[in-house]
Length: 260
Image (cartoon, rainbow, N blue to C red; front, side, top):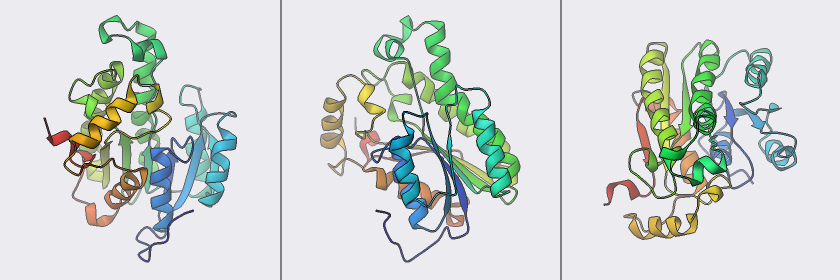
């Protein structure tokens, strides 16, 4: 169920949410928050296998646009933005919440990752955000906000995070460059770094349950964050009240990253 908030601070805003796989996804937490605050949404699903899991959630969001998007498939991303152009003619925000590494690349040492594994990881986890920014730019005629999801393993070596840490470091660098380039147009760019969350994507990381317990004990709040925590923070940053914040990595992790 979409929560009800009295303050509809995103009434009249329109945004694209990429990365909903199920009701445990960070992207779902973001979509719930934006919708509850009044925004109209476009939603994508990875493929036909994912469609039955995403379509009921899209219906709950009353999404105007629901389309497939596998960023590795030529033309699919462009088709999504063409549909947005025809349906809305503008865009206020984009949430990019996707990442992928082949299992052999993620589970092995960084030094052993082959070229194909490296390129696939970077393509899906980093370049796709740059490409989305490129396609969103002409639709954000009155400014806007672009969001991507990162993790602490971009800055510190986290056991079993491996090649994804390299990709997230590149992603955070891309956020800074995009923020500098798009800032004059009123477009802000953010990397959101949640603490460990039990999502479908995280299930591919070895010993992830141990990482969750470590985060719970280490964070100053002694609690794990939720997808709704991440969603509400993201929605705040999309508001005009946050118009002077851009180009940074914002941690939503109960303070996990500040404790040695």
